[in-house]
Length: 204
Image (cartoon, rainbow, N blue to C red; front, side, top):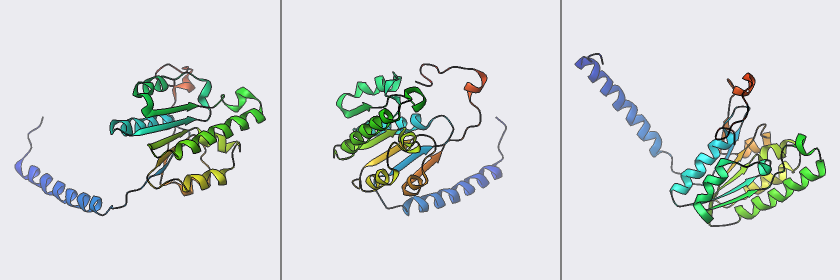
């Protein structure tokens, strides 16, 4: 490592001290504590992965987590097996029957989405659960399997300390407007484009 002159080190210390003061003041100004409505959307990979990262964080603090999968119910996934190790601290409902181009049955898709939403309402009403992950709910809303106004109204009416994460591409504007935190996953490069198939531990 190159030698650092004392004047440069002192300048750096002064700069970081100012930065710390600004940061500390900003943090001190945040006083509201509430359950968040979080939306992970966009064309990039990682929306569900990020949601499960927060679920793991909650579990690390001894909290209970609920998961409803609106689309991926037919798939075997590593994350479901991993979360099973937490026992009844994770309530997991895989309710989907695959993407609409797989079922090719509109009535069946709507019925599956409605059943999944009923389970989501049940989990949100459980006071022992701190976080509910609604995986691929955005897909069900995109294809109008569920009424977006009713869904958003229920999400807004949830109890004050409950965190909810909604994942999936093409989040509806009404949901985005209602959310506290929205992350748009961008697509810069994807291995599928180079002919690489979905792989265990990466996609499922």
